[in-house]
Length: 156
Image (cartoon, rainbow, N blue to C red; front, side, top):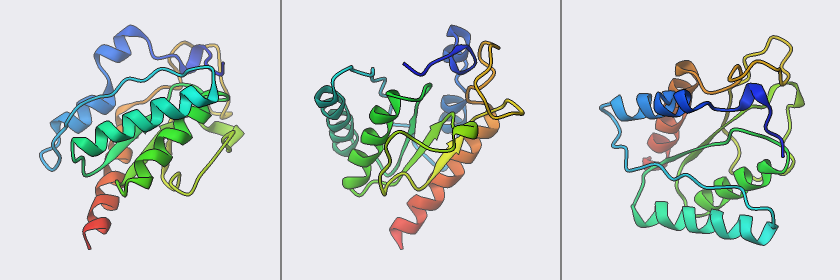
């Protein structure tokens, strides 16, 4: 399903998630929450999950959203659909994904204009080193900086 050793987020990574650390410690933003969504097999279910997550974000009156994925391939559909559903609600959105040399997604949409690639391997490929290609502090800082810019531009 597109998840290999170097893009797997270990339990320790989840407990010390760099994205959560960066966003929750920033005085300019208020962290409203974290939505954890699975990746259903059926496309109809993928759309349903994305719609529900985006509706939840909209109901919370979020000023911006960061969508992160820890895989690729079929999981790109979930990622792209979630970003699209948030964007369709006129909420600034930034994505985070392992892209590397593949440099393209299975599906895309106009709301996928700001994606932070958290590839760390020199060759830009999936490796056999557990957790090598996962979100680091610098990736999280980039994503938050991009989101702040999009939120500021939306207010103008």
